[in-house]
Amino acid sequence: MTAIPFTHVAETRNWLVILRRYLVFSAIAHLLWEFAHIPLYTIWLTGAPGEIVFAAVHCTGGDILTTLSTFFLALLLFGRPTWPQTQGPSILLAALIFGVGYTIFSEWLNIEIHEAWAYRDLMPVIPVIDAGLSPILQWVVIPTAAYSYALGWWPWRQRTLEVTHG
Image 1 (cartoon, one colour):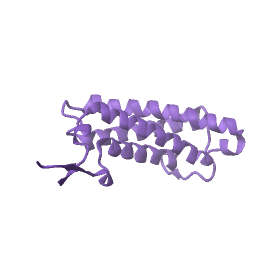
Image 2 (cartoon, one colour):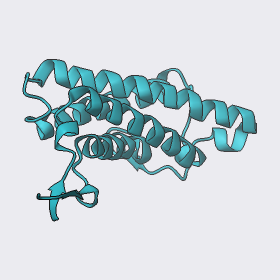
Image 3 (spheres, rainbow, N blue to C red):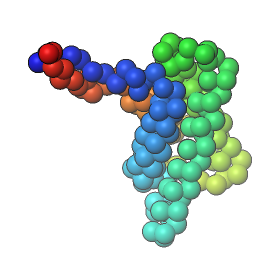
């Protein structure tokens, strides 16, 4: 019996599997992130528990739509028929740029123009763009982790497949 490395090769060649993994991982991670960073917003002090839960779930819905939009835009503009076997980093980079760009715009629009939400003093704000560090990091960390997971780039995911010779 011989141990052969098995790294989900067949699964990582299937674009539909990758899209599903990316979306599910992203949705769960965005929900967790929203609940984790909500204390950095004023709603944490002013909102009732139901309002806080609604805000986090509502924002997660927006995050899922943004995830789909930025990823599909990256694929439409830069994808090739050989994706996902090729172009892994370039698609991820494009999705990150679109996601961070949209987040900067959305934070400005909803804080400055619509006054839909506000940061507490606890929120680190990035100078020049006046956007919170947490939402910007959210759109770097989560898509990178989701894409890594979807493509099987995790080193600890390597498994062995037992093959018998006979």
